[in-house]
Image (cartoon, rainbow, N blue to C red; front, side):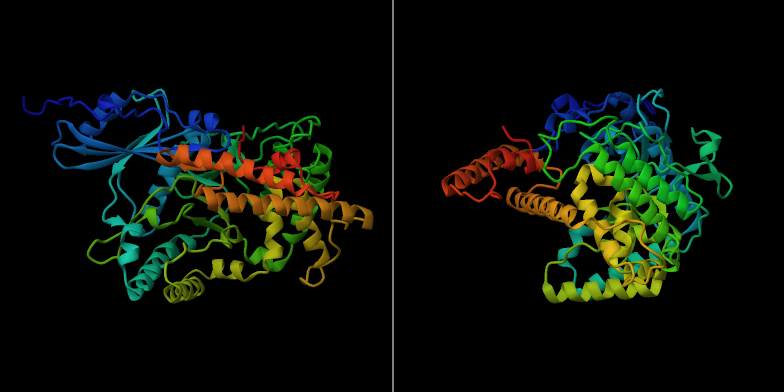
Length: 507
């Protein structure tokens, strides 16, 4: 019957499960990582809604499941050749209602205030009680092809033209002035009025919905014992700094825990408390410096700007056709993006040309970011790492405080650094701990390269068995090497020491 929606058997019914995470495994917290990315929703209802949103379609001809770090996307092709993308957030993305509302609000705001190309949103919901049973965004498929498919075949001139085109688009975002730091939402978002700062009609700035500020990181609990959640919005830099430190405190357990299974550089709760209290004084003092304030303009930026999220014309890859995946894009101090670098390029000479083009475009088109990148990195590192001391270890951040305190006058900072340098005895102990931290960091980098894994231990499913075997073999070989060395050095490492700094799970 004409106009009747026909239900065609899907790939799910042939074995592909839309609810389970299947793209990879993790060498650390594997069970937790995969479970946190499983989704409970009505896939049939989602397919039915996609058909209803595509005039002329009566069935789904095919679909692909794409799994990112924080969401699951389905690329549906209807029987009328219309391609539609449906995105659903997983629990590791943060508060699903807010991340969904914020992503749609950000895209809508960008479409309303710039000419940055973004996909058309067909429908969305931030209410999990809907018929699909989950927050979702349904949008048209991006126009063009992914830049990562075209990049290796592009000439140097085309690559440079593409870099310029990307910056011409992003320049429009960076040129917008915002009155506060946080995330963009619609004015009717499910937020308490206390946490909403009006922007233009229909929009507001609300709490930062990035994973840094929420209890959503696998294996990393939040406690909120000594401080309340501080997620913004923050009307000025001083408040933003407090948000960073309060986030650091939110990671600390309420009482001391056994450190026997922690790396020797990790530090006690009391140690982290002292460091965070010192850090609050340091970054507040840094925030008074005119150079920092000049680089702290509230700036909206794409949170994940890489070649897979950039679509270009198939005929002319220097033409940007769409920028996708705006999840967790937020309004930050410009210096938050100071360490952003373009992805690596294959040929050395070509890479040098692209890097030069990147720097020229940044200086000419987005001077606020160029100014931030020109600052001495030691001025910005305390902001970058103060909220993650419990994750990285006390020695790592203590070294940042030592660096900034030692260079305070050299860096042209006013007054005296609030952080008092350790005594000679304390410094010797710190140096020993920091050396251990550096060894652990170097070990992790080498394992990542050897096992071809991501920093969190993710491995594609088809490489999992080989990676797991190789991982275990590498550990055992290192243990055997240490045992055969029979060193009498007091600082030599034994198997127990190795297990404490090993970054992944071992049997």
